[in-house]
Image (cartoon, rainbow, N blue to C red; front, side):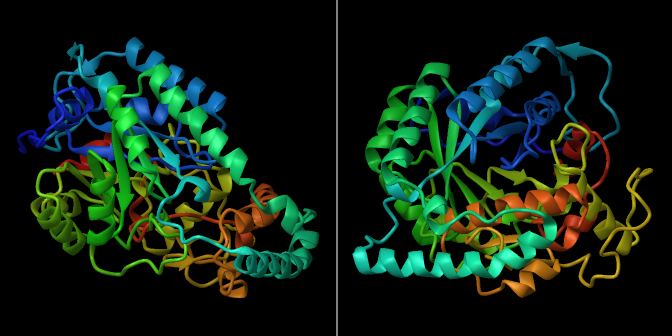
Length: 422
């Protein structure tokens, strides 16, 4: 049995740090943009004794507002088990007690657009024009695939974000964090300026940043981050490098955690990336993390908003490894059943223009040289990915997953929390 970790919390006015430290289970449900993270999933993980994050990426402020309200309503309607399963025992006792800190373990993750990312090198007119040409060329290469799927590919102009709009929406998110009094927020894809962190701390919101190495951790803390999500190379979905053009590191998660802990000894650390079992969670904690974050492990839970295509890919990955759990309703065959690598994952820029890990599919190899242009590439491929998913043509779908994808089980989220408890 693991005793709750005591976070070093220099900010007594940030109650979320204390609530995260006191969580019965040091497991955080990762924010998974694009649908998998739902209020139901986050509330289920928190009710099971963990903590959870809603995914603000690719959503409007109004959509995030509604999800926060829904998650809070779900938490307010439910009681908390008297034991959240720190020992990894079976289902919780029916005896329930209120969990006073549950609402404080609810967080929101936000993407940092280039317009407010202090780690993006300045682009002159020549660099911007070169990037636009790369995006235009990639759009042309995508059109035959999109045509086969009955989808359209936007123009490079349509896919290019407006910096003023990016800044305005980011400001709306910050105002929403203040208005709704989010307990904690993490930033991914970049590092906002110090004034953003100071503003959130003044509002009682604990701000954090996803980092992938020691240098990024130092920069984040230097700008005012009060907690860090330390992401290793086995993570599913996008790598959280602060500079979108940077090559993501390959050092094992435990090594990165040890380095960041040595560099930032008083900052709470949440280790993320490839956490699929209790022994992996334990190893990350022993390396210096205060909690672990898992995403792929929750993708097949009934509470997750994972698409049918994504669930089918994960089921096939599990099946090919002889690790099917429970009765899976997915069909016995898939359009690309013979495709190699279903148990494998690949880090690719093909789908979005930013490095991300997913189940290996042919689209990754065909467009392995996609330009480092997020969000433009993400916009260009959006319609064709949606069409492919609707047709269950998994060859052209982004099936984000970490290296432990074959271990993802079709069980309730609470059971996943218990299975990860160190």
